[in-house]
Amino acid sequence: MRIRFGANKPIARSQQGSGTYAGRQLLARRSVNGYSKQQTPPTSTMQEFYTQYSFVVESFIAGLLASVACGFGVFPLLSKRIDLTKHIGLGYGVAGGLMFAASVYNLLLPAFTLGAQEGMKIVPVLKTLIGMLFGCAFLAGANSFLTPERLSSPVFKAFGSRLEILVFIAMCFHSIPEGVAVGVGYASEIHNENLHGLGLYIALAIAIHNMPEGLAVALPMRAGGATITKCFIAAFLTSLPQPIAAVPASLLVWLFEPLMLPFFGFAAGAMMFLVIEDLVPEGLETHSRAEIAWSFMAGFSVMVLVQLLL
Image (tube, rainbow, N blue to C red):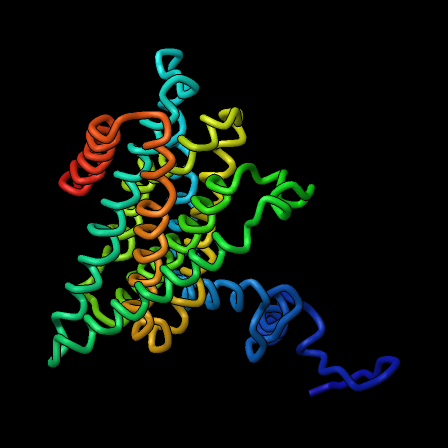
C-alpha cells in the first residue's frame, strides 16, 4: 500500500477519497455532527433523557393545566345578574359549602380509601386526623397573625382583606396534596403497566373540580371589589402548587407516598376550620341563619354533583 505524508501524519492513499470504500467508511464515522460512532450526539442524549423522564414533564404540564382550570371558575361572576354587593353573605355561604365539600370528598374520603389498603386501619386514620389538627392549628395561627395593624400595611393591603388572604392560604395548601397525587399517579404508570392512564385521569378529575374551587376563591374577592382579572389570577395562583408539587412527587414516590395521608388531612383541616370560623360567621352578619344554611347547601351540592360527574 503506497503512503504519502501530509503535514502532520501519514495518510493511507486508500483513505484519501470518499469514492473508495475505506474513504466512505471514514466519512460515515465522522458524519454524525462531527461525532464518531463511539460518541453520543447531544440530541440523542436529550431524547434519551426525555424518554426516561417524560412522566415528570407530563405530570408538570397536567398540573399546570389543572391550575388554569381553577381560574376558569371565576367566569360565572361575569354575569351581571349576580350582584355580590347586595348578597355578599350568600356568597360566603356558597364558598363555604364548596370548600367544605371539597374537604370531605376530595381530601378526607380519598385519604380514608388509601388507608383502607393497609393492615391496621386505625393507623392511617390517625395520620389523617393528626394532619387535620395541624391544619386547623396553622390556620388559627395565620388568623391570629393577621391583625388589623398588619393588614393595614402596604404589604398585606395589596392582597385584600383578612378573609381573602385566609381563603387564598387555605386553597394553596389544598392544592399541594392534589399535585402530589398527580405526580404519584404518573410515576405509578412507569412501575405498573396496568395503571396506564392513571396520572391523566387524576389530573383531569382535579381540573374539573378545580373550577368550583376557583369560584370559592373568587367570591369573597369579587364581593370586596376585585376585578375578574384579579380573581382569575388569584384562583390560578392557589392551584399553582399542583404542578410544583407534582414534579418532586413523581421523582420521589417512595418519599411522598407515605406523606399523602397527613397532607390530605392538613389541607382538609385548614379549609374546614376556615369555613366554620370565618366564612359562615361573616355570612351571618348580613343574612339570616336560614339563608346562610341554604346557600351553604347550594355550594355543597354543586361540588357533590361535580364529584358524581367524575
